[in-house]
Length: 209
Image (cartoon, rainbow, N blue to C red; front, side):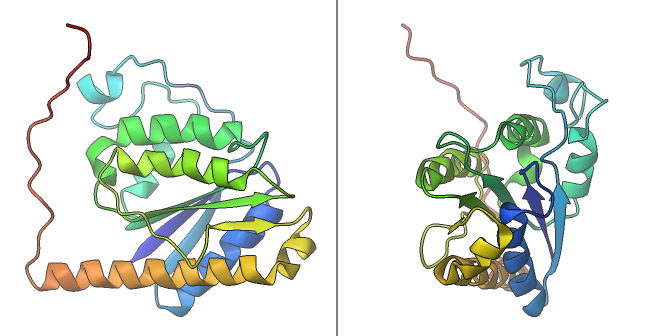
């Protein structure tokens, strides 16, 4: 079992990384492989809605000169995701939101039924708004959302300050253990013959008569 953790901060080893590392360490202690991928300094194209990924691209984006397709290939081997971001103006970072829009749209059904979680770091406020913003990606791909004992956020302006947020760090460890537990439950279900739900053909309804 493997979990990919995406760091959407421009600072590769900053506050967001400190939170993700605590989650990753908890996963590793439970026997689950964890890899942190830094995407916060990448320059991602925004999705243009061209539908190449669905019509001709077979789950890959038409843009090939940024890392989205490479990350989609990496995600095929993952069983779950954690997306981490700093809070900018009570929202997630521009890098991670631009990435996620194409990652989830192009990846399509590949993401279905994989557990997902979000981790936010902030100096003081805005984390709950950003947390709600990022969790919405999971709801469009039939993904179970992994929670912790409180909202998945840490507070601090430096990694050292984040490590002093004892409750926040405990929340990260609990999240890692909860993620590991869910993955093991899914594996046990598969071993017992429980398969994923059979999806109906999609129906799209607009509200204009």
